[in-house]
Image (cartoon, rainbow over all chains, first blue to last red; front, side, top):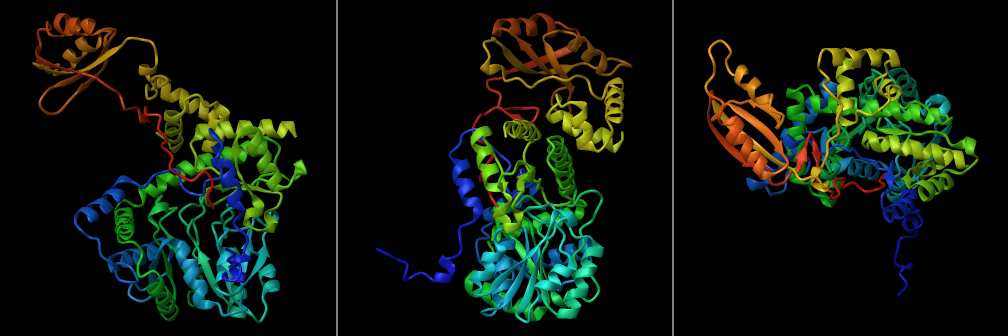
Length: 392
Length: 163
């Protein structure tokens, strides 16, 4: 039976993720070293896992409030205030969601009316543009380049704004480039927001992973920007909790209550044990000055340096990433496309990377390599990539 | 101890074959600084040696290991140190720890055969005048050592590629 006529053509027309094809290729290959993994190589700290186990044993198996456990929202509020100088009322301005992904989805569905435009920096995380389309809007790519550290520049944002522009997605520290936005960069962007009144959806999921002594700056902490910002964060990257699916979104009460309406009818609540674990992560993190987070960040930082040096030693141009756990070297000098390079590398050397084009057309000429992998494997992968380059 | 020392120890405990150049890159120090730091830690006996973690069960070598709980009479002025010293000098002994709790010293012993190990306990260890009692437990299977899990089952549950 043909189902075409049943399916929503707008959704059917969205191409599958560019990552999918490489996943299928790499999954069949035994002994491949993958630099394509977009999640930490740490497992969730024991005390966090144990908190969830105890909660199950104690029979805490019911729904939580729609917005999430109040105790968790209070900890989130404390965390954001003390870590990033942004204040959110736990009762009305914080919504706990199923991963940061659901936050992005509900934010877009609450804001976007048919035909509204949402600015999406490129290269960036694969879900933004499809989520805008699913919400009935039109994603408008805003190019970022290596020359400007993959930062979002105000002139490019300004040029992309039309009367239909509703919001801007601000994904920093950035996946896949590792780019960050420093305070001065954000201030320049804030000026555009003041002039145009667009809403900023600031996805700060990698906020704990910044390097070179640079602290993450939250967009909502800038003067006057709180009113225009929805801040998204979560536990996946900072506390190595990807599989638990707990994230959150914060913003003005009036907006959060509409987001909660979608969340309440669609999801009801984020899984209870994930919330209990998240609560433990923040509570103990606060008591121990986030030592687990620091330990992970330092470990990533050593590997980050190793990778940047490795690519540069191969003669590849490699932007120094200052956030997340990815490097995004340029393979332009090989004359190959990103897809061609990654496929050739996988077939010839069994090293899996993700082509830059999976993150938007302007990712062409780059590959994303995650360094959330053991050092010995990173070294082997670097050696193999150098061998591969020599054969080209 | 400097931050560099700690960083180096973190890296070396995972892989001590990394060349100085890579260690320098990873820690953001110069090759000279790294070499000096390692040299100092060797001199101060913070780093004692660079040895692989071996899964002997996969080799042809016959080998038995035992953990022996030893109760001793501490000696005047010397405490347990003198006894420990007598014990750790035996070449069969791989590790010796002073313990809190029901016994005093925990002695890890390695020998080629069960008989050899039994002889060690009866002839060498039990006959020491300060030793008042021993309890020997043989190691049947080793699961994890120095942070390395011996089982070959896949330990990375992550998707090969994810966004």
